[in-house]
Image (cartoon, rainbow, N blue to C red; front, side, top):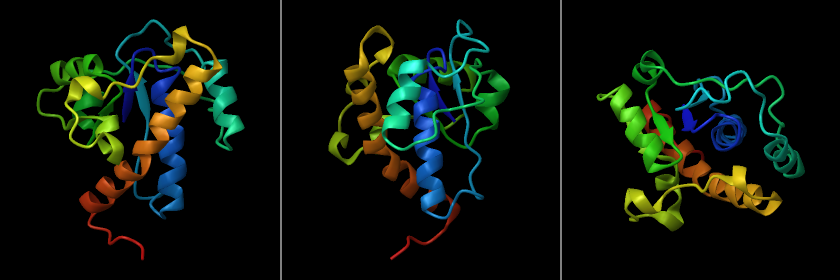
Length: 161
């Protein structure tokens, strides 16, 4: 599960990109992927139109049918991996489910390897313009293959040659 604040920008973008990458890796049927937010302020809302636009411009589905929802303790406890977009989100997830495997999404970006968690936040594009959504998508894409490789290892599925 990918998790951000309201579940209309960062986490659905990450969910969509990861779904695409898992499908391409032949793992689409082996992984259940979803997203949520730590807040209920956007509950029921679709993916932000600016996020939809940048996803479509880059050849991804635009998130039709997505409705924002708040993560619950049951959600967090039932997931094998929780991918937080910021340290604030990670703290909220750890408070909900202390035993859950919570990781910073960008920790899977090879260019960010070794950075402390507080330097791995994916900036909230909500307050910016199209360039901020482009930057967010670039950060999401940069870590996506690392997430797939990690999950592949957890599943015990050999890497493709």
